[in-house]
Image (cartoon, rainbow, N blue to C red):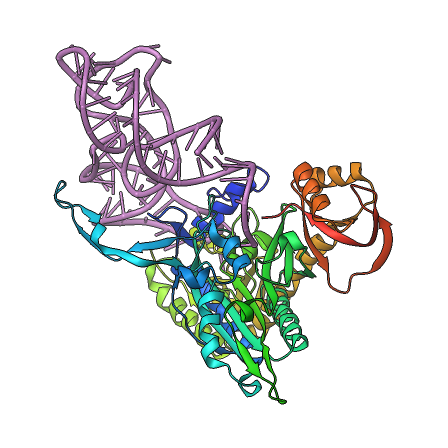
Length: 492
RNA sequence: CGGGGCGUAGCGUAGCCCGGUUAUCGCGCCUGCUUUGGGAGCAGGAGGUCGCAAGUUCGAAUCUUGCCGCCCCGACCA
């Protein structure tokens, strides 16, 4: 067990924090609730971003960038959305500082420099974007408008956690406009599928696609679709959302178009986003007490090579061989690092790269040079083996693929074994306390019942799964009739 | 904003209750030698506004008051 990391059994929250800090993903900053994303963590985010960006473009979207600041009058135009975010908005009220006459060397806000209209720091960009779309859309020929932006947003959270909930975070937000409701719904579902595919295939985290209940819905949306993932402590985590906004924003910002028959109508909208929160999901889904476990497809480093030498005379031999391996692996498109740094001993490096979750480690020494072998260790299972240098690249490629599969399968098995059906309230409470995970139970469909269950158990309805099986039953709490089971869980 | 914990070298800490030489130890760092197949060993060395401010006192890391910051739990939320 690692000397550096609190075990999951001891303190799950602390384990998570340790992984982020010791794994060099991020650091605390001088700003409360805001983190510094360190190069290793940012490389991970960049890999995720690059894959998503490609998928967005493959589905016809273009990137653009809108302002960080939203004039308050624009922000409040769509009432439900504005209300939903009002409590967590940072607001710019002044545009200048000046020297403090009573306190030399200090600055104060210049009361003379008050803005006529306050600027809201975007918690999301619907307002500024729809205000702009109004100018871009006149005819059905301008539709669909398919735009994404990569940006930072600010939500003044009371309590923050590295990656999972920070006051400022990075994300992408897609904002599309369509001529018909059907087309907008299709877009909403399509992007949900993109997210699910990305999270499952690249992050190796299985998700459940579903629809949110009214109380969990995005403020201003008609329907919120989501992907829900399950963490190792049995808590659920919303990994992405895709919203069908109906004509709410079009009406609020007066965005109309002429159809083929020259009839004016409001456009139909969607928005969808995933954030740096995904990094937190990734960490909690796979990692163990020795550190991070990163899926090969998005790991910043896929392979690390550590030479083991005795005395400096033979070091050149090993260096030459190591560089040869790097060349071969790079040629095969593998992200690889040869760590021949003399400051650290092999054992230290082994532990270090395990902590950082590098999927495969190759170690070799003089003994290996003689036998034409290398030692390879996979991070996910810690399994060690000695293989021939010949065909090394093919073997590594296969291994990386196997690791990707294995960690997905492991997460899937955990997830599947933690979806539990119950029809008894007593068991429902017991399951939440003792087993965790998703609980499939009947619900009478009212917000009051949902709220009551949340009060009693801290569990919320994570989603109503798409293509849910219809089944007559009685609400777990009230006993009133229900047509289908929904998924409850305690969540991040 | 409530409840709990904590602030001493880059990191982790002892000392605080019961004030008293030069503030403890480990890791890391620097120099040298030996090492290198799972977080190296020996020797020498550098590194401190004891979170900040005021107070009590001959004397404060230690006592008092105020403030600041962080972590964990809760309310809010993605």
